[in-house]
Image 1 (cartoon, helix red, strand yellow):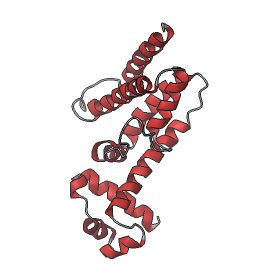
Image 2 (spheres, rainbow, N blue to C red; image 1 turned 90 degrees about the vertical axis):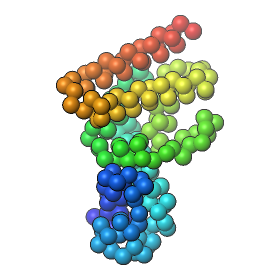
Image 3 (cartoon, rainbow, N blue to C red; image 1 turned 180 degrees about the vertical axis):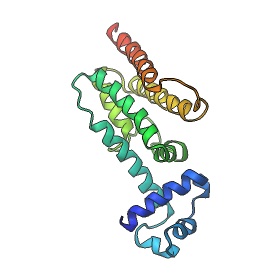
Length: 189
């Protein structure tokens, strides 16, 4: 594995274990068995590493969402939601880092999400599903869906971690209920 990739992998481990506040270049270099100044050969500073981690997490989740081949837009959105839930389960450390430890760099609704953003993929899918929907309303629908997905993950991974439940089937039904409501509301307009 290249040093640049090892830096990201070890950074994820440190942040997952100690939080973003516990992350330092000195700790990172120690884990890698190198001197801290050597990190600057690969990344300009600590912020550049955090930016690379944000990009890495977003790209990995986006790749999963882009791999879904579905022509029915509502089925696409549902499958993207399930892919999000699967990502959180299978990429636990990366998910926690990406969604619990790092803030979004998007300042407001008027600014588009970054090009590889998983959120942007959902936003585009909802725009197809609800044509002519005002941008602010569209964002509210997507934020609602995103919040639902994130809430399911948080419950499954924290408070209800030991709760015996078929999370996949239940998650699917919950997403279907939300999307059915959005679809029905759009049909009545």
